[in-house]
Length: 115
Image 1 (cartoon, rainbow, N blue to C red):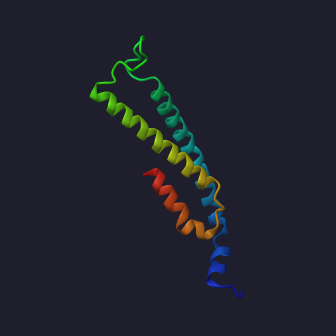
Image 2: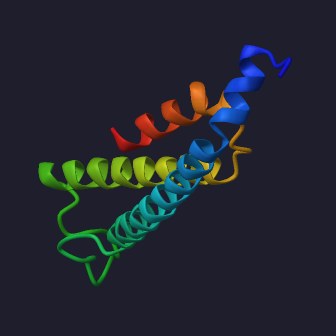
């Protein structure tokens, strides 16, 4: 057949690559929907602060409470992580899905966003 080892691997495993490509696209699409929903809730929570605003000044009522700071920090972290995972899932969906991408790039991206 006069193929190199890499060429033979590509021809022998093209069906497996197509199956892996479809699975990875389906997984990335489903997870990106969930990540967008989480980002939406975190964004909405940032504007509807607990306790509500003071009617005369507009400053949040619980601004001097320690749990308000905890709420703010966790909300910012959840929004950051959700948007980072959305961007990473979009980068998985737009990748070219070559054989060399399946060796390191795509599994690493998937492991980062799923952990």
